[in-house]
Image 1 (cartoon, rainbow, N blue to C red):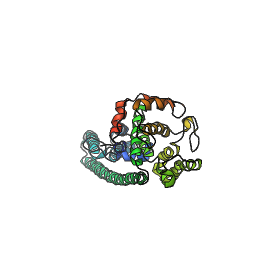
Image 2 (image 1 turned 120 degrees about the vertical axis):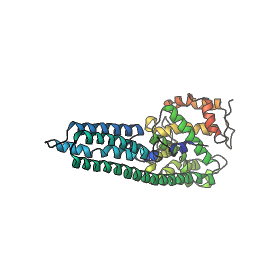
Image 3 (image 1 turned 90 degrees about the horizontal axis):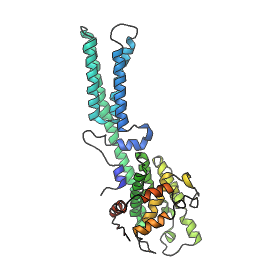
Image 4 (image 1 turned 90 degrees about the vertical axis):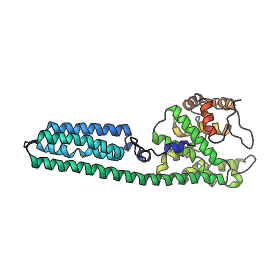
Length: 350
């Protein structure tokens, strides 16, 4: 069984695929890191630019010879870009292409200059040494980062699962709403990996603040008093404070803090309205309501899928963002049921 979070952190491998740690690095550094396609384009363009400058300034003693020599050294740029973002196998392919251009230069521009050609061959060897050493070092660093990331993920899972020790079913609830939120994100076209990871993590940890709520309130079978209700309403602030010192959870923290805000501004803890509520929290609100209505609760049985759709649709523009709600309404019962079934939940049709 593969969950949404597992898909986000799944390792990729094999010939022609990105290095296994590329997803984690992109999540960690966001816009600093190019996608595989942009990295490949950067490699191609830099190779063409360097080779153009190199061949446009002919070899031999002239006032622009320094440009020729500088361009020759710049062949390292596409190789290092490939080593950083495209993995060992693709770096070798890039180095082969650069080497072909370099050999063409040696053969055509330095006929009869054996010593100069020998020096050029030495530069060619340097390109291969740089390619292999850099790509292997980046691979090693990436694997170390992936191990750190796995430890990070395990810690988050343990933190969320700790609620299950007190409130039966919370762990499964967090897993389900994470999956539902990702399904909604798909329909909304939220395809950025960093945004999806923040949504998945925030959904998974949304109730972590309940650790700070006393058992007498959290596990109370009957109705809560006003004082008790005020106490339990503190859990978004408690959760945000709990993970607030973890820099990588900055975006996820916003979902934890705002997951009980309502689109019309009547939610808590800050009474945010409309687009002032983070998009992840607006997506989560629908996913959370859907899970709450489609599962058994101590005070009622699970509602049917049809009843849930009608109930959620009735709160368009009040509790829920109209755009997110419209996306929800365009997802079929079969898609929702497929996600629910992973956790043993059967959606009743009527």
